[in-house]
Length: 164
Image (cartoon, rainbow, N blue to C red; front, side, top):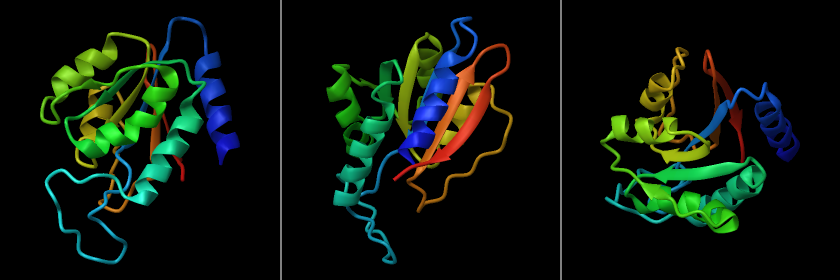
C-alpha cells in the first residue's frame, strides 16, 4: 500500500512544472466514540480511537515527502489529531478553519502550495466540487480510509486511494 502512495505522490509531483498544486484530502481518522458494529454515541468532539491514531501515523508516513506546505483542519479534535503527526514531522502548524465555512477553506487551499486537508464525511464532496472536480464522491459514516489526491491545473484531476 505504501508503494501505491509513493507512486501516486511521485506522479502528482512530477507532472509538468506549471506550478501545479496537489491537494491531499482525507476524512478524519476513526473516532473514539465509534466502535465497529455498535451505534456511535456521537460525542460532540471525541478524540481519535487507537485505530484512528494509528491511521493518523500511517497518513503522516505516506505524505512526509509530498512537499506539503500547508495543513488545514476544522476546529474539531478528531481533524486536528489526524493532522498532528504530519504537522509535527514537517514542522508545520495546521490552520484551523470553521467546519461550516467551506468557502474560506477553499480560498485558503487555492492560495497555493501542496496541502493536506482533514475534513468530515459531509464536507469532502463539496470541497472537491469547489476545487473543480465534477466526479460525484460519497464518503460513508464508516469510511475512514479514503485519500483523495487533487492535482490542480488547467483542469483539476482526482485520484482516489485507500490507506490503512
